[in-house]
Amino acid sequence: MDRRDFSLALANPLDTARGTIERREGILIRIGRGIGEATPLPGWTESLPACRRALDAVDAALDGGGAPVVLNGTDDVPPDPLSGAPDAVTDPLADAPAARHAVELAVLDARSRDTGRSLAALLAAEPATSVPVNATIGDASVAETVEAAREAVDAGFDCLKMKVGVGDLERDVARLRAVRAAVGSVDLRADANGAWDRETAHEAIDALAGIDLSYLEQPLAAADLAGHAALRDRGVEVALDETLAERSPAAVLAADAADVLVLKPMALGGPARTVRVARDACAAGVDPVVTTTVDAAIARTAAAHAAAAIPAVRACGLATGDALEADLVPDPIPVAGGRVTVPDGPGTTVDAVGRLFG
Image (cartoon, rainbow, N blue to C red):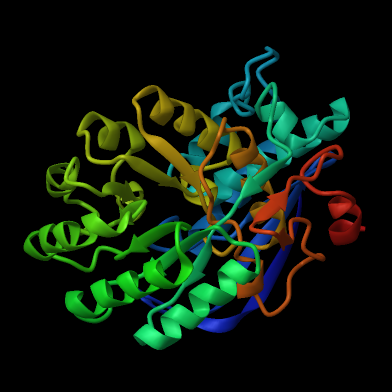
């Protein structure tokens, strides 16, 4: 297994509950002809040192003469690429989703190249050729928020996700109402990042039900499944994001806590895993949305392939390439008209292996 470390500066610092992030650091791996990316984000995945240890163990297992990492030899769609791997490979990845993402993606990428198919075509029988994406509107004054929303719509986006929960609820409601009045019938979402208590979240739902909000994302703390379940069927759909860093998708579905699941392949352990979770969600009547953890180009493009494998997927959070000051390769999925076109050549991205490993 070949490896390469990378460190990419963000175009603007990203404030999170765990502090400010100024760079995204990760590891590229190559297994055979395939390339994978691990870009850990503590709080969502293991730490970078833990990711390195997991990949060290996998590397040792592969070099030690054990069975190679292989696909399961069936025509499953999506495939489980690690089902044929020995315990020495899979055990270190059990609690290291970013490392697992890298290994799963490398194996899928190699298989895609060997069979002359795109990753999306490996993950679904009839994948979409493009995926709708949302623009993200940060916290700002009413006037600044409206201006940013108009710019996004003028650029072709028909789905806007607005950050809320930084200021008081009255201010957020005013911002959302002003945007709705300014941009008309675009798909409008709000993301509170778990900022509210139950009382505030109920007030928010009541106040926002009349402005045709598509969904309210993570209004309550991640662990509060019962609180989120109680917010449903009140006029605004409930989406869960941070909750999936603490609770399994199966637990969230069993609790009837969400109308929408926001799926991050890096945090779930790979693009094939993401598609399987998405299908479980759809079977339960819950819509999946795919987004990134501000990953580099390889993982971001793999997320687009995963999204393309989900039938009629709603707008996804894949327009994150401009969050990086520079990337590993030219953006394989630039946004145009509010959509990204999914590469249709073999593998994840065209010539990525040659560009990054020589």
